[in-house]
Image (cartoon, rainbow, N blue to C red; front, side, top):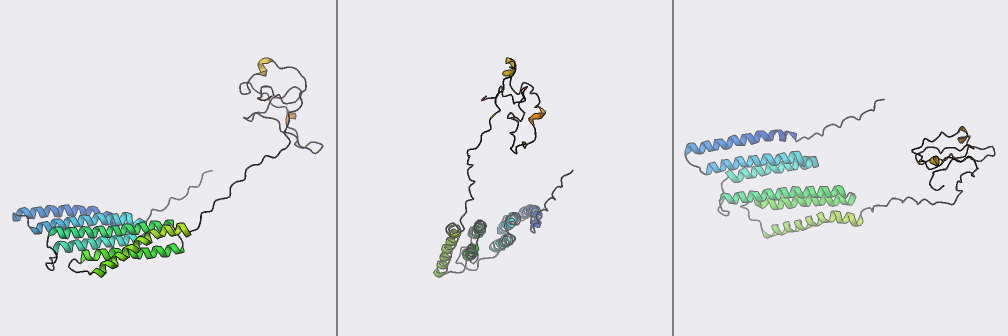
Length: 301
């Protein structure tokens, strides 16, 4: 008979798989664009501010493609909505970087240096990616500690994480807006509540969650006193040779048990017969001429 094999599981569908196929094209296009910028600088005879902005744009596109590939290929496996949020934030970082590279400064309150725009954009990247990492941490904690109360605490914590990320990222996007002291106090309060919710999820589950019940222990086997089977009384008979008396059971070929060794189980009086003794390997003991088991060479006899 041939065993029925289980059908192979269907491959997991990733709705963001097209990003992985697009990544090599973006990298190749970025290399070609960088080469064209170099040709432009050689033709005009100088490396001006426009060349730096073009190089920054190319580097920004490469960064965006790498982050988008990570979000689509890795983050989407955690949850579909988490992958969509990650790709959306990557697109937002791309647009903000392009704005900082090409848009002139609105006023003189912020130095119009290239390093300042680059530093603020890197801070924005760090804030958004740490926010996504925090959301991933909360989701993993919620999978381990489930329950109606935990679901509500997790939802509130996720809202606080999003509010904190937006609160820290907004000043980095709108650099020319003066945020008052009340704004930063509100952000600080949200950060404290966020940390409280993150710690409260495992702590509440540990204190008030369902306790793990120990399985019932198997009862110990109690040996009750009973009748110990005794070998039949020894009946004098012909003495076996000494060489056969000390021969090992494995070495000597044991004769087959007589037919009378396996009679009916029930006796005429209604009792039960003892089973013919065997070695530990299952071989029946040889029989003496009188039909009784030959215990010669057995340990203990």
